[in-house]
Length: 276
Length: 312
Image 1: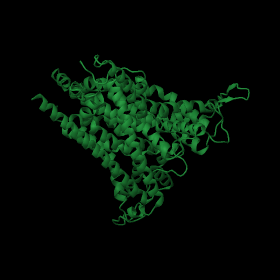
Image 2 (image 1 turned 60 degrees about the horizontal axis):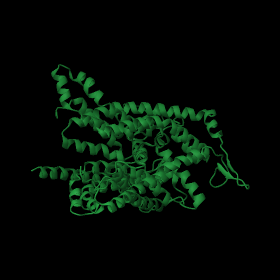
Image 3 (image 1 turned 30 degrees about the vertical axis):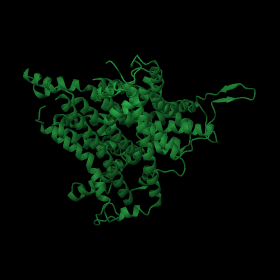
Image 4 (image 1 turned 135 degrees about the vertical axis):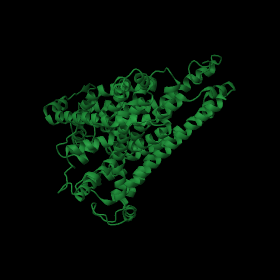
């Protein structure tokens, strides 16, 4: 590894990162502006944050988004992990290619297409079998479909690099395959599961386009409320709300990154111990 | 490998276990397979069917394709009118071409900005790398809506940029950036830059530095070594990153709606308006299907290079 980096690379890196972060930092700064006028700095104030607490529309939407987020991330981790196990452990089965495709496609599919197709499915289902009613259920199902894809990709790489000798040893000692997996491999991939739970939560919390399509009357998630307000113009309470959401998502992502890094370090340490 | 855990090939000595195992395997495979089949793949079939339907004043707002007449004959009514309409009304073709153009140039600019960033990260030490990656990944997970809104705070008429420039005396009156094509490009590049940097980094990180040293030993100047060694070896990353920017950028809805003017009619916006504005579901489905057909190529390219990279 060469440690000398040209000034060109350093400066482009610095400028790129600055471009990514300046708008966010400015937004957070504005959210503490006492003045309702966006161009004037009226002193430091947290009044926009306390105003949020009295806005029922925003509180309802926040509660709905959080509920959906918890259901979605739990469901996605379960389904995504099962898909990852299928793809890593079973080399040959009917439908493997199909599963691979369906796991990778949501990552690149424009949200607007996924949203519209899923809505058409839900509407037809409701028409024929009387379920699901548009709202919480449909948003949760639609989110799980794309979040589980992210979970699968994360868990898949971790599972592929997991050492299977322990699991084989447990089986030799008489454990059933499921027991052996739970006792040996599961703890190893647990950090990946935890971090993909957090990432699914942020994806669900952030989603606007798919939710807008599959949601029904009366069920507005936080991004939907923000979008309708932003279209009307800038309002200082949205600055506060956006700052809160960015901080929550940032905290989730940092925690997820921390968990993965700690697990990676542990893995390297274990490997070194094993070699001794 | 003697005993593989959940494979078909495992432990030949236990016939009962073998049978159980073969069944148990499907308990793991089927839930995600069925879920994604029903809620991700089959919906495309519904969109395809409904794109052949007619609008109707009822719930759901389109006619049935298949109908059973009283004498038990099944009737299939395919209405090609929606697709004909896509070709006859030039707004669809124009908005699609406009989306392609916007996505293409945004991707090029993202590549030009993202490549040196990714290369810079790849050349730092391992510990710096993970911190820098986290810094890039953080906005990757933050919603477009919030980041576009944050960008609006900088570029609007009373935003930070204009305020600063006016204060410095560089300009006399505020620059009009919002509701222009420039703002749409800015929004896409700002939002999608992390999508470009991450796959580029993944390939550049694996680059064998002894090749560059060999090139230097043989007398290549650094720029020559870059063109001959680094650039060709990083092509999978360039393609993966470009597709990750290009494909979603074509269907972008939030950015042209919030930052663009009435001229910035991208296909995502047309689709949204057709659906929520005109409430014409069959035409919206036809737009979505036509759009999807045109995306098959880029998605296939992405999948191809992505699997290649995973295998490497």
